[in-house]
Structures are given as C-alpha cells and as structure tokens.
Length: 233
Ligand SMILES: [Mg+2]
Image 1 (spheres, rainbow, N blue to C red):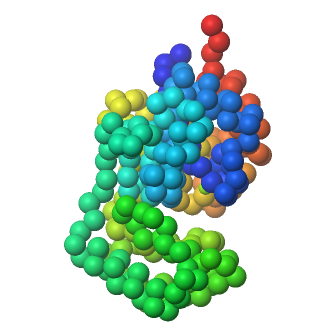
Image 2 (spheres, protein in one colour):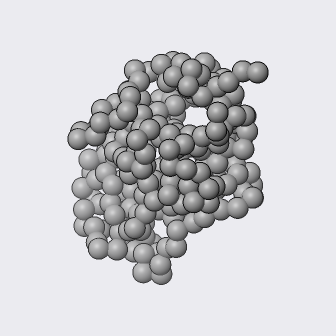
C-alpha cells in the first residue's frame, strides 16, 4: 500500500469543541501516523496544534494552522521547516486598528486568539457573539476577509485558505493527488475538501457539496480508517 497523505480538521471532525479526541479514534490515529503522513488542519494557531499533537503521540504529524496561514512540517518547537503567508504592512496596520477598536469598545469581555497571521476575536460570554459580529462589519475591506463563526470572528489577509495550503503540502511532500484524503465538517474545510475526490464529512452536511462518504460520529470514522488504511504484518 503506498503511503497516503491524510488531512484532518480538528474541531467537529476528530472531537467536539474544547474536548479531547475519543480514545478509539485516537488509538486509530496513532497507528495511522506510523504508516502514513497525517496532518491536522485547523483555524487554531500553530502553537495550539503542536501542543495537542505532542500529547496525542502522533508520529511525524504536521500542522496547518490559522486556516492555511501557516504550515509546520513537524509539531516541534522549533519546527524542522515551516511556511507562513506574508502579511503586508497595510494589513498589519488594519489588524492593529481593528484590535484597538475592539479593545476600546469591549475591554476584557473579549479575547484575542494568540495568532501569527490572522486576527480572531472571541466574546468571553457566547451570549455577546451577535454584538461582536455586528461590530466587525465596519472593518470589512478589500485587503482582508472577514469570517463570522458561531463563537468568534476571524479577520484574515486575502489570498489563502486550507485548500491553498494543501496544494503547497502536496508539492513539498511530492505526493500524488490520488493519495490525498481530506476529512472535515465545516465550510472553512471546503477549499481543502475540493482538492481531492477522496473527501469525507464527519457529522455534517455542506450545502452544494457531495463528499465521497459521510460518517455519523467519531467511531464510524475510526472504523473506516482502520479498514482502509491500516495494514498489519
Ligand atoms: Mg471543524
């Protein structure tokens, strides 16, 4: 069996938000990472994903952070090699101003995710998410994208996503696209799901998108991975 490149979103795909990966799926991922190249891809920053991978015990696992803004070729500090999108002076200035406006308006009732390239704002109390969203509208501009999530708002420099990061990885690792498998659950996963015919949805439906297969729950996903990717000698 040739080595495959398997890319997994984290939240909603491998586990519930702020919850650990269930044991059965975790054991499967640990075996998988010994035989294939596993990558975790998330909106979370690299430092968060690296700490997670360290404790999960996934061999040689790589990380795509901040929705494609960063790629780390090892989950170590420092990484063996990395890629990071360029954030122009103009965008840095815009982010600085947005941050100042948010701080002035909301003080310590919001939290900025510690990012390298994006600006992500969370309300501490989810009840205030509407206000956080409507405040973001005034900052929409041609140089940045604004994404409205159910728990946060993301401001990102234009011109990258998880799909573009997947293309960079394929080239860097010299993997054929037919050996690429992508697993996700949200609309921010769509750009990478569209990069392959081997696309899988977990606990989700995405309008206008037909995956190769869908799974109801993390155990179903683990069973699929075991049957299709693990070989025992
Ligand atoms: Mg997700």
